[in-house]
Length: 312
Image (cartoon, rainbow, N blue to C red; front, side):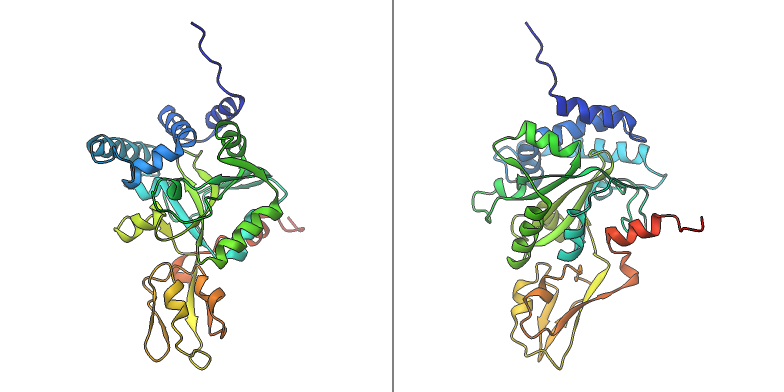
């Protein structure tokens, strides 16, 4: 019996894995399973799959192994599951920067932006290689939001992998198409998350455009697992402009706004996504930097900071 050969994109992923610092065999297998079977993986993790309840003990055991691997490959802290798989909230303009970069990027250990022990590198090989994938979180729910094709995969070896393994659910797109998807999802009131995962070579690999009803990470956040990181901004209200229409409270995906004479921001809940800002017809809302919430993922600014000055 002939053993089928691995696909070229699988070999490319494994070659990149071998070059990645502190990347174990378990990480490589985990990453392959995650990329190869994302719909099953995420449906089971969210509890949407019919077998989720029966497999719950096995899934908890696997989760403990993942956390143990993260602890062994981390920096001496005691990372939890959130350290291995997390999303950075991004206002739409910052998200659009990530899909418009034309040069390779190699930014490691971005603790000020990504405050986790693992999966905190921003390394983009072939950043102009972009694909859109049907959202596994939405696809796993019987009643899901539309459209499905809103998960943007950026750079290699990830783009080639999803195109080769999921030809019916993924397609290659241009930077301009990616920005259009971001703008349309922003208009729908959905949140842009730059996702990092330890098994994805410990780096950024995708921008998900998330609705609070389908997104697994937002569900985990509500249930006490801190999988999402603030954008570094917080919403602020101009009380003189606010007419207390309540639109911002209706669209806020984090339930961070109440209306009492005027809009009131519940700062402990606000993630600085900017959805409310874009939907306020009175222009009474804006995003303000909050240093206590870390640095924004502003790729062009980070590149300027990393570039040596002409005098160096």
